[in-house]
Image (cartoon, rainbow, N blue to C red; front, side, top):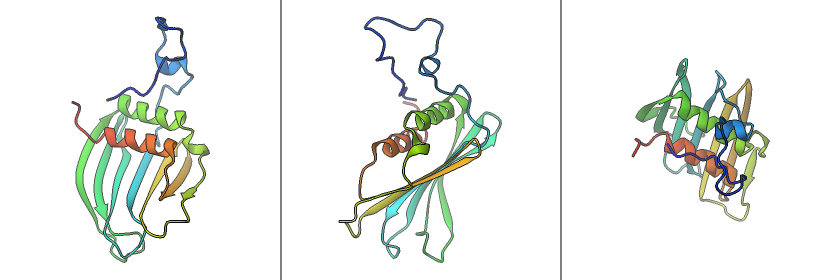
Length: 162
């Protein structure tokens, strides 16, 4: 698992003593019991191909699962999901992901980002649940770096450690 936290604010050669870098930056040290995410991506047009998804959900205390799969476009009458892979994820990796959500101020993002100049193309969305709050952000034919960083870290958890 890559560490996305940095101590670049410290003078060169200085290492915090007795503090985890997350504590140094005031990040949460526990994962909310209800922490869950679902990322979907695919074509904007409803009549084109399936949409992929990555879903993180609690399995048991301190354990989560990530399901990777495909399903029909939301406007389709076909509600079938195909699960392609399931990965168990431990608390420390999920804590890193939750901290990334906080670092990127995900709950402060707008609900929708789109490039109106592009009619077709791709779209993606991310729903995050934490501490009883739910935030849904959709992105279509544009880049939102905070959104991209959270999604990249979620995908990192679906890959076996190198």
